[in-house]
Image (tube, rainbow, N blue to C red; front, side, top):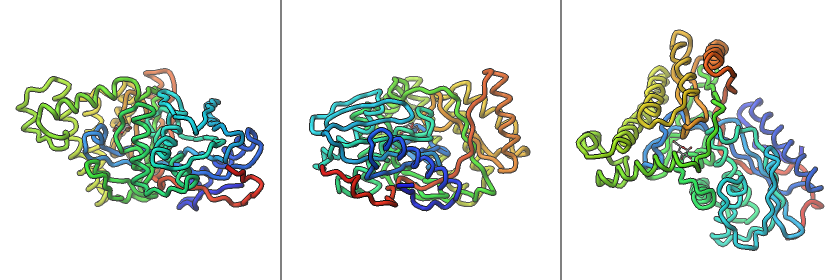
Length: 412
Ligand code: GLA
């Protein structure tokens, strides 16, 4: 062990992250022949409720999950930055002293986009040897891009000696994603990946970028199951952008700054196109579902939280049309199990167009719930979805060197 994670609240989580850090270190040493000097890790996220609300200045209730991206680096000699994504077997070489150009569609976009933001703020970023690895399914709607960006931003703050608050880091990463990956995402993913608290969901008010940590029930009382539909689509593809545009044109016609300000009576009476009507109705109802869900969590009313989750799924499916049959099958299977079988709620999570669903249920019922979902999925699609239970962890962290190695420290 050459670098270690912050001691976690749970031994299994900490062991999982440490194994990933060790793997990343080994790949780094194998490739570059010396030890890395810096490292950081950032989690992925699931959203309990509140999708397609963040870019409408609304509310969301995500949590950071115990699946991570780890980045480690050292100064490079010769003066070329080499970025390696260990799990993708991809490599990018670039000189950070030259102007950096957007690279939509490549993993390098997320790293260089963040580097570019630091440089734009006057930071001196040396050329680097940099290795990335993760155990977060990529492109599965679990914020793998935000996780990579925030991990890189956390490490660069140390390298460039430019400490940023977790808030500033989240905003910097959002800009990086807009400008370098050309994805017009909202703030939710970077925000929770950066600021989450272990054992808590995070109620984010995306109008003012403020949050409240809302405690989740202890793990012996409730489990969260993540089901990956196996359908992976990039947000850079047009559907997310089209939806965002329809929300913007709806607010323009309603004469409000964002759909957060729109009232339902106003929407019903307005001459909006069909998609604009649907987007506005979704956002207004989803915002109030998020607030109800947060209140349900505060008073540990899991049936009420579950009802809000089911209703959210229906709205995303029927109004926004961002769900896919794979996710609907999962949610229907969970609904069939219902409260008597240990399910409180289920929904697709994140942007949709594929990606993951989540089920909130009783821990002792998880085996039966998985079996029901597996069987339903198998019947319809002749394959099994990837499933795992997850817990709420803290946001990004720097990795501490446990064996300071002066020989691994090269002059810039
Ligand atoms: C993606 C975006 C987020 C958010 C969700 C939908 O994850 O990155 O900003 O818009 O979709 O809620």
